[in-house]
Image 1: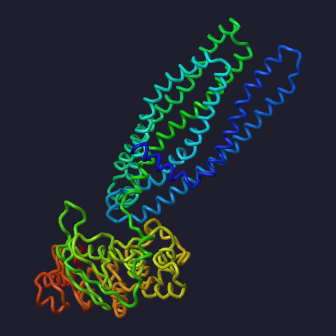
Image 2 (image 1 turned 60 degrees about the horizontal axis):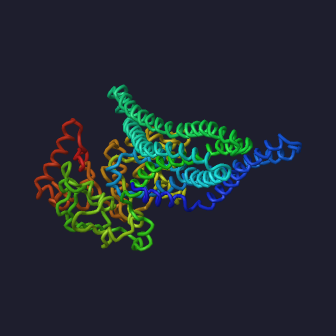
Image 3 (image 1 turned 90 degrees about the horizontal axis):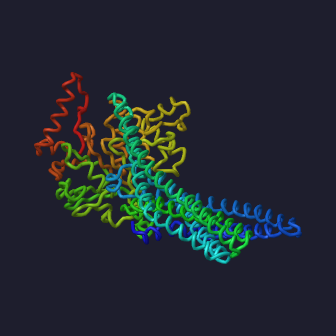
Length: 595
């Protein structure tokens, strides 16, 4: 990222806290002034030691300057540290808010571990550069200039010696600083890779154990950790070079000033008191120069973090706040859905998933989508929810193109049960209320009965307030599906999308929930990606999809007679059910995998 752009971004983070930073800087400057006065007091003390004047007053002044300067700098340091934490807090809040509004394709192209690293690790580096670095540059720069002026007043020749050493060391620093930035960037990327590897492992922890892959995955994470260690060492090495250059400059300057200054004292050009004061200023110069070097180092480290944060901020996101103000109001009653010659591909270079898909769903009632794997059934739901934008054609909800809806208003009308029925870490109650936080206790109790969860809640040690574990690990697959269904029903949606919502349920619960869905369909538009033929036969209409197109639309009886593909799917499911030797008292249960 260009330096000008980096500074613009830094100022954006810095601006809301500029008055607090100004106050902290003021305290730091006052502390610096008290330190600058100390060598003058020391000079006065040395001069009085050779005479008969009392040194008590000078000692008191010198002590007061030391104590007062330390106290003022401590207050200023606290103000700046507090402000730095506030900068990080604001940056994390803003970044989290941005990332949670990312468009789904952006999230699918970016690893979760990398995004988490930008929120945690990169924002931590932002802390130092937006406050410590800025203040150190200001206070260090002013103190450095003031000290050099005082040294010039004392002896211009000795000042020339000091400046010569500083220029040589500064030239070396100019070569080191870019290396610090590059090493820090690579180190942050390596830390992000550790997060990626860990997220991958813990996201499929049972699979890792069942595959006996613990050693291999440990080695893989270890490799990422070693890379972070190598890059961290590289960054530390260059930082050590930068830091030691200050001490080297002071030591070389001290030896040069001591030698040349001693000769000037011997020649009578300056007094011993002048030389002592000059040497004190030289030692005092160590602090502001160190601050400048530290500011430059932290800026290089922060610049790498800023670049990674800005990369995340520039990912395409939904403008939920802006669109919700101008989007159409939420309607009433069951929603209608229309696809008009929809063409869709996930990104350029990939084949089309939909190739002119058209159908109409008026609602209420149930519409089932069936077809072979990869036919594009699940993608229908993603386009309705506006997780993806169509490549061509239109998707209409209530007669309006979904691109004209505010995403928040559109999704508020929809209940969506995903194929894998995700359950979040937290309590069962938190999961049920996730999509409907204002739901009452009576509504929760009602949905527990409808989703066949009442017995589960009674068995749990803390009822609804029982933690369900990471990704619902304390629940069975069927229980997670019922929780997801209950969560969607609690929202009282106008359009209910069920993507193989009963695939992991036993026959008894599947039959009960099938009846619940049929009941909901009397007053709501229900779209189902069909997994079981028993669900399909209940649908008012069936959309048969194949190779990204709508092949046929009709009822079960009509399609069995008129469409070869549907007839084969239905026959396969009947055969699968009969093969087990279990007598059929109703529609057979089989499987047609979703796309």
